[in-house]
Image 1 (cartoon, helix red, strand yellow):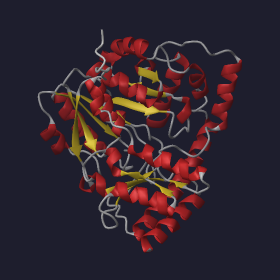
Image 2 (cartoon, one colour; image 1 turned 180 degrees about the vertical axis):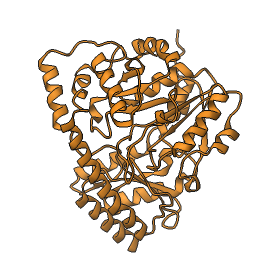
Image 3 (spheres, one colour; image 1 turned 90 degrees about the vertical axis):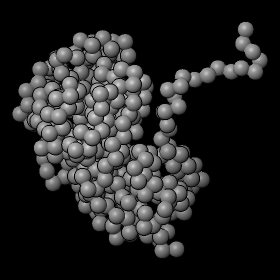
Image 4 (cartoon, one colour; image 1 turned 30 degrees about the horizontal axis):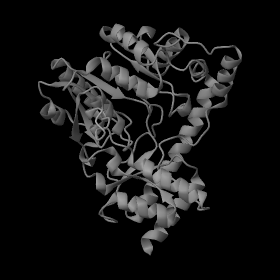
Length: 392
């Protein structure tokens, strides 16, 4: 019988799972909006565009046709084939459809990959700053996230030397992103090749998060699979294709892991969302790609406005973003604590941005992430509001 003073306890792994600090910013922004304040949102990493209409129409047709039952755990064959064909058409990379695993968002892909690779105390090398969920997923599977500090000197991407120094007998894999969140920087192909060669020699695996693939500026999109066939790829329909709420992504895995992934997918998810899969069949059609390319050009225009505007205000951007829709700016000359700065900008200027502490520990309180996922008028208004706040 439970003692009257005792209480249930949570799993110890939850001690390592942190909340997003930006959610505090977002919640307060919603409160201020409810009070009648006008808030400019530069904090949320979600495209402001609606899902392209051809995808919506395909989803409606799927619902009307009764496609609401479970599908195979790794996705419908038609979509796996479409994704494989996309790599052939766009990148001239040949992939067997069997290697394409359709997942509930890129988060599902990350869980499957790490679930079949990570043993208790396995080490996974990640960049700091980096997407916070990656390290939390490692903790979920009782591995150890090894945060590799990166800065502007290496374009906020890992160097071969740094990975070699961080690698130990317990290291199982390395997980990097290109384009990266929060910095928008890209991994150079020669770096990917060098990293892959070293990691293969250690009997490890290289995983590349490419969920912002397609959103690059000044250069064509690429894939790490052009560097080596057995790199693990995480991707998503959320960003370039504007399908965030549809919760659909994919994983491209080496042959040796496919049976294990299928078994884990059956148990974790049963199946990806059925209507979303049929909707995504329209994502690769020519008329949809015309829309997504138009939107990419709009993101580029926003980036080209916001980057010099932030610099003029005193933010330092030492590694220019080449992709995604973020600018990771050093705010040390304006405030010694970026979280306090973000809260002040919200309360006093009506501008919501994300403090660097959401993305790691390396110089985190000296950085702010700005997302240009809002229209040009809101970006201009944000800059004027920040300028007024800084001058007072």
